[in-house]
Length: 162
Image (tube, rainbow, N blue to C red; front, side):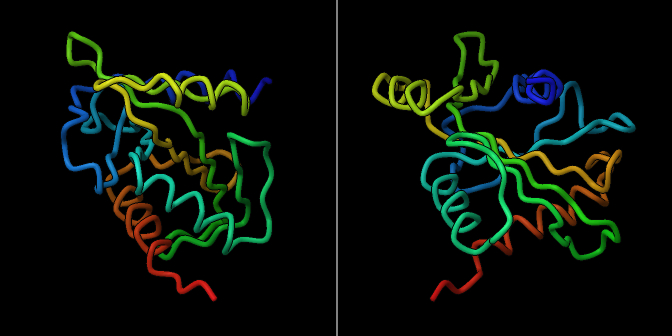
């Protein structure tokens, strides 16, 4: 529960993103501006790309922790970052509010997932938020680390599954 309270503010991140944008892209979101020094980045994926990413991580990784709607993959190696990383995936829905602010609502359980997915509207799409922790303290908080993390996330889609 404590970890959820720490990550929850990062998940409910606002930005001026439109859900009509290309949903095949990975979107980088920062509370405030990504231009600010030390701004912690999260990575948003939508619809089919999100589903494919979760499936690829679950089928190609042995070590995972979490239940139903939140997954943590420890000791991930990201090329260019020396320390091991923890990749956390939060499933939920992305919603575009009338004032064009984008909000992510994470699922709290399998039942919550079913209820929200059954009630999607034109402003809401299923998706995920990926949070990457470097070592025990560091976050993806620079443009350089962001680029390395994006390359890692894109590489997951290129893994050949037997």
